[in-house]
Image (tube, rainbow, N blue to C red):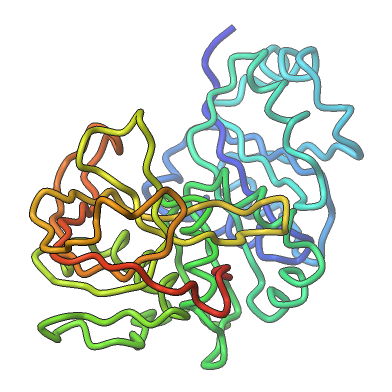
Length: 317
């Protein structure tokens, strides 16, 4: 047939998917006369009115269940309606595999995956359905928290997403649609000669250094970490980091940055083993690295000494 660009709007019921689709269609850059098929798998409080659909050259097809979304269905839509693009409104309670299998079998090309989150109910979903949230975050190109207020913990939410998907963009909007300021008060002095990262603040530093690496370029940091080293790693390299729980006990990952040891002043280095705890002082250099295959922080060790493990060894987001 022909390539059919698709935009996935994914989130729990009443998370703002329909509103975002309508807002997107109304934008000049999108309302360009092309025919849009809105494929929805749910019916919420917000609906697509006839006038809006006519103005934006759009139409809606509602499917009662994911099983109705098949290769044959897509081909039929292409032959009967000839849409120029699809906007898929998908419920966060559904598994994504079935949808993606059909996309892979057809001429649909997924251009962007957008996850919407109602900030007023986010904590409840995080507590009771975190695995579903994490599944959405892992795939998202953009995550939008709407209905935010001054009590919304934007820093914690951003770190939770970046921990599982560093490439995702994260935005926050107030109930009136205004963009929310998201500058976070850091729990350490970023302008200190040596930035000392407390045990509980490692996750904050790790994500902030990933998001704003240019701010940390050339800075010296000190923190406690567990060493990862392997014969497969280049000589003189380790990864100091911490274990982090991004979802549940079955979803624990080790997070850390590569660290060069060639300039360290420590005399205990040769006795430090894999999985041993150390206190590391290092200078951050932001550079392209083949291991990352992108530009990321790389640490140059200044001093490294053995240390006792922290009381809480696991990082939570």
